[in-house]
Image (cartoon, rainbow, N blue to C red; front, side):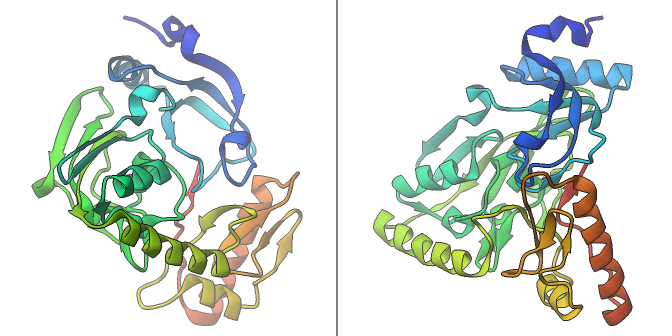
Length: 292
């Protein structure tokens, strides 16, 4: 049986992960691997499965907090161009999981296809966006998916079609180990009209979110019928600082970090928010941020 040592050319040991996350905090990955195609990726997955080595997939790092002690096992990033291909045929767009969401939106807009434009301003990769069903007030990515190719924990590739797919608020039934690609059904519209709509959405986001700071987007999911940001603000935590991390004074559901911040400082703020909101409002805040 092959081993991880057979992939030295695409492996870096003890690779710092902080530069690959938007919060710029956290430790290193024991093995950081960048497979060049689906076959190589599947082989790595099979080896990890058979040898019980922990494996995680790093997307754009825009919704991730890595603990200061780092990550044991393998961290895979689908950064090779093979995983970032975008193909357009008629009203359908197929995108690799490694493609940036912004690139997918711009390519579909240029082709005069609307639907994904409601996601403008959301960072990260297509795979990450699908895993958490990224979206906003105007819609989410899941409503346009008609199929997805996935890789299971034992290295098998399957295609999930509409009858096997379900999406809800920050939820996706695509819970296999790795999403490889997805196909979206969009609708035709004048590219200029799509662009104008995106420009309006972008202006609104810039006015209400700390987009120029180091952050990982919304920390908590909005409880049903409520705003997590409003709850945190009402609990008196807006602008609260812990070391070099703080709840944004622009949007309380964002934690922003300064150079030198630690993940523990972010975790301390998260715990304070959960405790105060639970004690004052009886609401248990659920994380939207992924923590490794």
